[in-house]
Image (cartoon, rainbow, N blue to C red; front, side, top):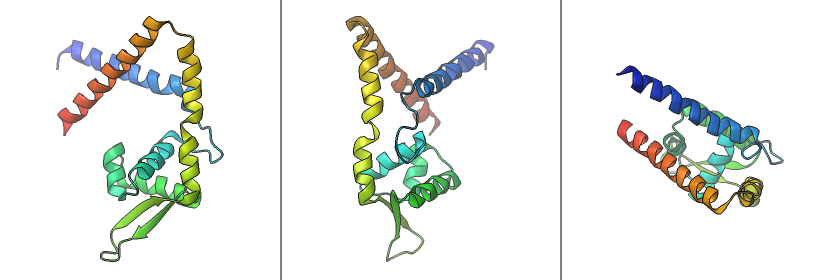
Length: 152
């Protein structure tokens, strides 16, 4: 690998780190609910809720997690009574994770505050800045998608 590629990889990593942590420190993605959910816990809840339930392995794949990390997240969400785990009658080794009725209301509110904060931020941008910002993120995520697909 050429030195310029290594430098580019480090620069890209720093940009990714800044996007994540500066957004969080800016309050866009911070813990904002009564349950003190982390970003990954929120995302798992949204994923399970939008899919009407799923197997823990689906969560592993979706979020690139080790099964132990997924188990830890699900244990926390179970203790908070936000998800349940049901064993399949046909195979007790298989588990289906579902959100609880209590969690349905929470899911509807999870993105409310971050969206409100982004609305305030976007309202202060010019038309050109809004367009550039949106296009930049679309290019950014398309690049991440290509990297992920290249590795699988």
